[in-house]
Image 1: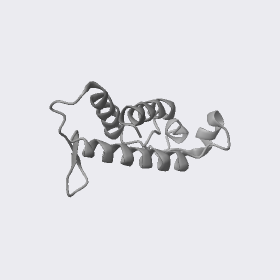
Image 2 (image 1 turned 120 degrees about the vertical axis):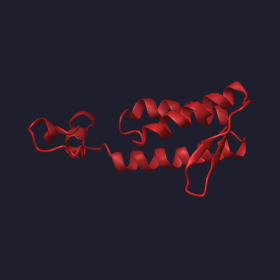
Image 3 (image 1 turned 180 degrees about the vertical axis):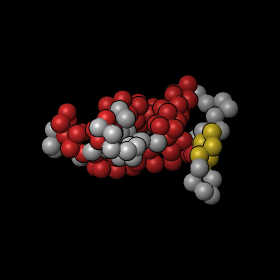
Image 4 (image 1 turned 60 degrees about the vertical axis):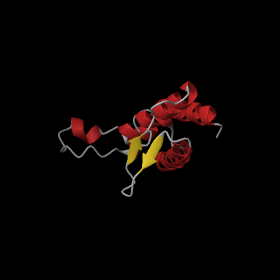
Length: 110
């Protein structure tokens, strides 16, 4: 989704929403999708803090604390961690991100 890069227009790696819409349709709204992912990640992160699987420091950086989590909690932590490490707020693979978020939410009872 960075078509200008192929034509030698620099290396900005800025996405072109028009290119996204060619595949996903004009109604596709990446901003709204990413806002939803952010809200879901925040809720899952808070639940992980609540079960002591995660610590968020004063700089808002997460630190794992998963020494002996039940399997379902570990899976929720892992799913959250995968998406957090990607740092695209689902832009790289929205469908997969939604699957991971839904599984984590289900595992944590959200």
